[in-house]
Every structure is written in C-alpha cells, then in structure tokens.
Image 1 (tube, rainbow, N blue to C red):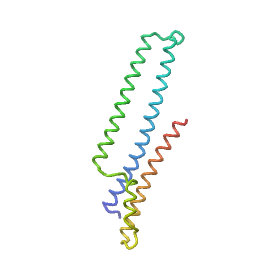
Image 2 (cartoon, rainbow, N blue to C red; image 1 turned 60 degrees about the horizontal axis):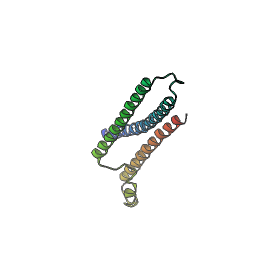
Image 3 (spheres, rainbow, N blue to C red; image 1 turned 90 degrees about the vertical axis):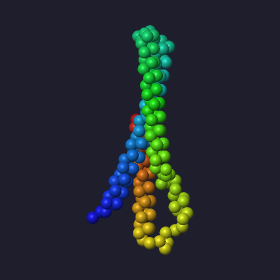
Image 4 (spheres, rainbow, N blue to C red; image 1 turned 45 degrees about the vertical axis):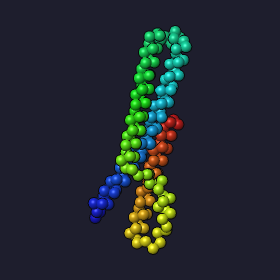
Length: 149
C-alpha cells in the first residue's frame, strides 16, 4: 500500500512532466505561428508590388494588412501573458529548477555514511529530476520534428 505522501509525490511528478511537455509544445507552436505570420507578411508585400496581377484592390490589400497587424498584436499579447504567468509561477515557487542546484547538492559530500533512507530519497529525487529534463527534451524534439515537415 502506498502512503498519502507517496501518492502526492507521484501526482506532482506526473503534473510536472505534463507541464514540461505542454510548455515545450507551446513554444513550438508559437514559433510555428511566428513563421506563418512572416510568410503572410512576405506574401502580402509581394502582392502589393503588383495588385492587378493578383486581382486584389488596394482597399482589400489594406484590409489584409490591418488583419495581419491585429494578429501580430494578439500574438505579442499572448507571449507577454505566457511570460508573465511563468514569472509569477517562478516567483511563487522561489526556487531554482532542480538541474541548477545539482552542484550544491553534490558538493555537500558523498552519501557514504548516510542512512539508507536518505540515499534512497536522494536517488528518487535524482530520477525525478532526470525524468523532468527528459520530458522537456522530448517536447522540444517533437517541436523540431513538426517544424521539419
């Protein structure tokens, strides 16, 4: 039987894994959106050079430019909101990611002479940290695959 603490720890681990994947996928989707917007801007500029060849009026060209500007503003607002949320979350936790404090924990000395429960807890914590980093990398690789075609 698992203790409540063990179950809570497992739920927290799963939540962090999901958050890491979602964050990586979100970054990839935002990057893809920015690429699509750049493509639209270039296409609009090309059409503006010869509106008659593309059967587009100046009024329609202006309308499309305005829509693209609105979309750009919305994307910037979305990015700012995401960054603000991440900052709030970092401020609330007030701790560094686990991979940044490894030097501090490893410089505290070896685990020799420590009780087995401390060694087991440290090993479990290290595995959790590695899982979190691997999930982050998995999401990043997925993003790169989707961008590559």
